[in-house]
Amino acid sequence: MARSVADVKKDVEEMEMLVSESKRSHVKEILQIELRKLQIELSKLMTEGDETKTKSTVKTTPNCPTVSLTNYAWDQSNKYMKIYIDLKNVHNLPKEKITCNFEAKSMNLTVYDLDNRNYRFGVKRLAGTIVPSESFFKIKTDSLVIMMMKQSNTNWEHVTEMAAEKSKEKTKKKPTLDDSKDPSEGIMDILKNIYEEGDDDMKRTINQAWYESRNKTSSFD
Image 1 (cartoon, rainbow, N blue to C red):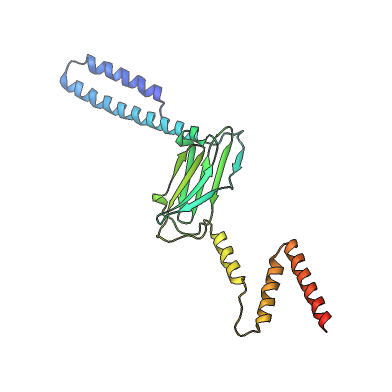
Image 2 (cartoon, rainbow, N blue to C red):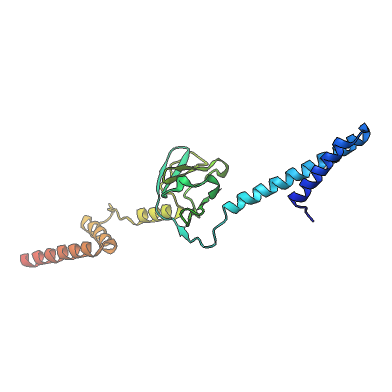
């Protein structure tokens, strides 16, 4: 059973008293060795206590609601992918209340007990691979900057893998004029695609254009 800090402190005090009162050098040496052991034990207990206190400061406050952060801005250099998050008063928090865990293809940020709220932001699948050990975050006035070191000096089209995949799909679906087709047929394909992906206003505009085109054709017949 682990002893308390108070108990070990009392043992240290008593051993120090015995060392000071001992007359024979050999006995004093033995007592000093035991004293040193007690001092080491006390130091370990006090260190463990400090670590427990530090951990307790970053635990989620039971009555504190958690807010998911979804709005962010991003930028990049050859070396880093950077995410910017606005969060009022975040600079007033001790750094121990902000944690950011990095993995090769993901990151997760948690801010504890900021104005009676916890905040979370994460990306489960990044568009590229990062170096977790070289990634970090910075605290700015009313904002946080997440610095993710890229594994390779390549340009990322997006932050998330999902956004990158959607962009590729959209590019694939984008129609082009086929040289083997009749030009008018190719234009019709493009218009059909625009119609299918367009909003209500776009569809009304195209329908009106087709209607007017048919009427003009009929008037010449």
